[in-house]
Image (cartoon, rainbow, N blue to C red; front, side, top):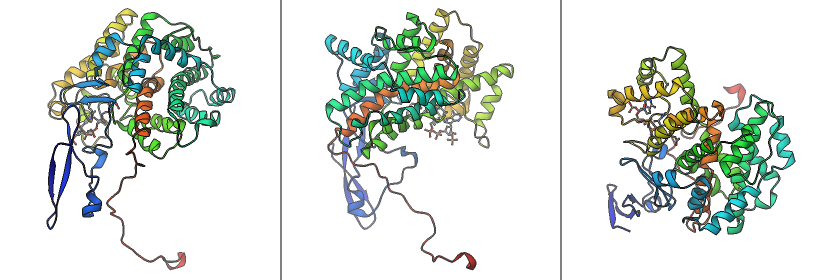
Length: 423
Ligand code: CMC
């Protein structure tokens, strides 16, 4: 604790403990505020509210810093791999060689879906949005693994579920893609790396360089502290709901275009600009018009107010991947032009709006052959270890409580009911 702050409420002054995190960020602990004063705090969108303490991910939006368990995202993207990062997020330390080998084997052992779930996915219309299929299929796992529905999973249960979901969510995404294309499923091959197996189940082939590019994207998406979907996971998990429904809730929150759904929306926006002749000016004007709900997709962030370190890495990756795959996508030039124009425009400069992780990721996914409406499902694959780590931390925190915010009521005061014929 780092001292106290005084809150003067007219006739009453109370002291609020100041909490300091390991990177020096400070918070007022208001946990006794209502009991001692009758006041609550009001913070629309939780802009100033810390919902928990967490040792998983640190980010500093002013300086553009992102670290998983202390390790800079740049180092992990350069030298690690997705499963190692998943382990790191979940267990808090880098794995030993033996731990890594066992973990890879364990994740790869979840190489099948229950037959009923396979049929369920096949029964969805081909045009179904992959996020809807993924969310439904994830919660439907609860029908097949009923031993994992209890309110108090053991450490072993949680570890098994971590590996199981990493393995099976990948199968669900690939299976739903094959279904949407009217193609037969391709079985998982446990001898392949995580990303190669995924690409093989999607396309029947997996190039090393393409798999590496995908692996980097998944690392960059793996966690992002208390964002909308991670917070949803914590809220659902706080009721002691089972992990399948908890993760399904995270998937639903991610689907929205202000969050993970932005990657699909960015590509659709770039395609529209391309169709209209490539001039980004109209999109910029629309985004600045306060009467128009349109926003420049892939721009802006609640926390990053300088640059998004993930976007920096992805932009470089984007050039590399397109060159390696010999893809000449006009959308990349449009995106670069749009970024340049926006960064010189007073509206975006004043509001500190920069490209976020979703701005360039779609161009890479497109080059890898992934359909646009699947981009957010790819984000799910990446974010899964983060959600699981946030859930584990929540469930192991002895001070955790069910999430139940309060409100300031603004509706009618008490009035008497009138029967239908008296109204
Ligand atoms: N285009 C135009 N104006 C914008 C944009 C944008 N993309 N983003 C923010 N603004 C404006 C906003 O209208 C507001 O203006 P004013 O001060 O005049 O009212 C100001 O900038 C501050 O924005 P805000 O809406 O208060 O910021 P927020 O923290 O509530 O929202 C955001 C953050 C990411 C939802 C928002 O920037 C946005 O909608 N961006 C587009 C969608 C997007 O790319 N989402 C992906 C986020 S990163 C991936 C992830 O982790 O989810």
